[in-house]
Amino acid sequence: GHTKKMNFFNVGKYFTLVDMPGYGYRAPQDFVEMVEVYLQERPNLKRTFLLVDGVVGLQKTDHIGIEMLEEFGIPYVLVLTKIDRASKGVLLKNVLEIQEFVKEKTQACFPQLFLVSSLKYSGVHLLRCFIAHVTGNLPVVEGN
Image 1 (tube, rainbow, N blue to C red):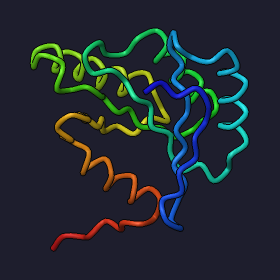
Image 2: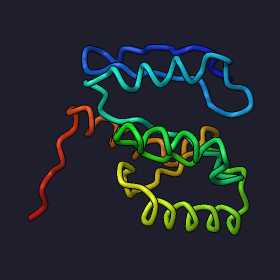
Image 3: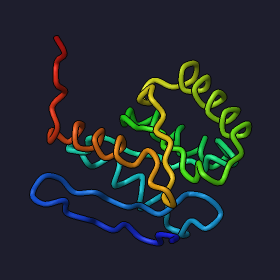
Image 4: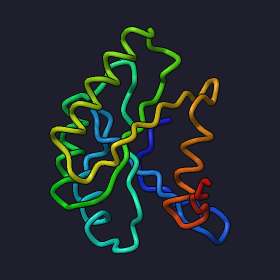
């Protein structure tokens, strides 16, 4: 769907997931005011997940969102969506370009990209585990 306002989802008593509107061509008119204020005034914000279309890669609007997160020093993760819709060659090209961008141009971005498909649920389990970890609900197990 296309989120028009912020939606809050309590995940048990553990954490709250906030679904924010996209910042592309369908963004609501009050997007900047709504999102900037929220991001700047939430000291308990653990991580922001920026969804990027895996078929087209980073777009101008994605760069604007990234600039905002970098400017505010907010830790974030890039999640490539729709990976089942991209050809393997296109997906690989986009992943490599984004990895290079993250390495060279960002400071607040988690270095690992998460690739997910909502149709086949590919990558969703790992993303859920990461969310559980950053919210303090899944400790990392040390190996021998």
